[in-house]
Length: 393
Ligand SMILES: C[S@@+](CC[C@H](N)C(=O)[O-])C[C@H]1O[C@@H](n2cnc3c(N)ncnc32)[C@H](O)[C@@H]1O
Image 1 (cartoon, rainbow, N blue to C red):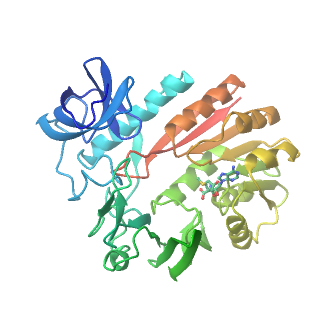
Image 2: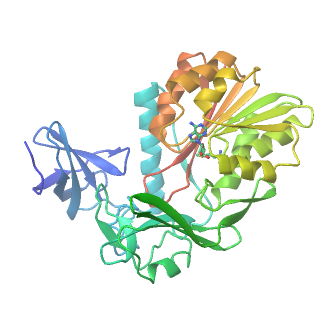
C-alpha cells in the first residue's frame, strides 16, 4: 500500500511529538503537518513507506480551528524550520504542554499537568543560531521538512533581526553550509562548511568568539559551540537549575554535559571554596573556553570526555547531579551510573521530552521520584520545547 501523492480528507486528532497531529484514514494513522486538532483538512501524502502510517501535509483547510492564524512567514508551509506558525503563540504552548504530558504518561507512566511557559521577547526574532544551506542556484535557505530540497530565504522572521542579512544577500557554492550566530553583544559570527575534494572544510568568515552575559558573569567562547539559542534561555535555565540544585556549602556536585560551564558556575557558587564541582564535557574547545571563563573558581574541575566513560572511574558520592544531555538523552547506562551513586537530588535539563521521559522512567525504576517540572517555550514557532525536571530519592 502506498498513498504517496494522494490527497486525503482528514479529521485532525491530537497533537503528537514532532510537530504534527494524528488522524486516521481508512484504518491507517496519518501524521498531518500544518493542521491543528479538531480541524478538517485536505492533506497530501508526502511520505509513505507502507505499513501502518504515512505522513501528509495539509494543503487546504476545510474547517479551521479557532486557534488558526495566518503564518507571519511567507514560506512557513514549505520550509522545515518551523512547525506551528499557523497557530497562535498561546496555542503553540498549549500544544507543547500536551506533548510533554503525553510523553511522560506514555513513556514514564507519570501523569503530570504541564504548562509550557513563554520566555521574554515574543515568538519572533529570537533565534540566535541558524545553519543555512545553499541550493543549486547558490541562494542560502533551509531544507524542506524531511527532504533535501532547499527552500531559499529572503529573510527569517524567527531569526535575530539583521543576523542573516549578509548571508542571504549573496550567492554561495551549491551545498555549502553556512552557520550564523548572533551573540549577546549584537555581533554576528559566520562560518562556512563545505566539502572540498572529499574533505570537510570549515572557514570562519566573520567573528569567531561569541560574548554572552548570563548567571551573573561574562562568557567568551567559540561562537559555533553550544549556547542556548534563545537569548533569554541561558539566564532562566541557570536560575531554575540553581534554585532546584540547592547544593550545600562544601558539597560535591557533578555537572554532566557541561558545555562551557553555565550551570557549573552557579553550582560552584553554592558549594563555595570548600566544596567541589566536577564538570564533564566531551567538546575540547568547550572545556578550554570553560576553564578560562571560570578560572576564578578553584572548586571547579573539568573532565574532558564522554560522560558514559568518565563516570565509570569518577570517585565520590555527589549530593546533586545536574545533567543536560543532547537530544538523544543520557540513556540507560548513564542514568544507572548516576543512580548507583545515590545523589539526593538530580536536576535534568532536557531539549527532547521523549528522551526526558525515557530517562525519568529509568530514574524512577531506580528509586527516584519526579518532584518538579518546568517547561519553557525556548523555540517558538517550532515543535521544540525545553524541560527542567527535579528528581529526588
Ligand atoms: C545541551 S548542551 C548543554 C551545555 C550546557 N549545560 C549549557 O547549558 O550551556 C550538551 C553538551 O553536551 C556535550 N556532549 C554531547 N554528548 C556528550 C557526551 N556523551 N559526553 C559528554 N558531553 C557530551 C555537547 O558537546 C554539549 O556541549
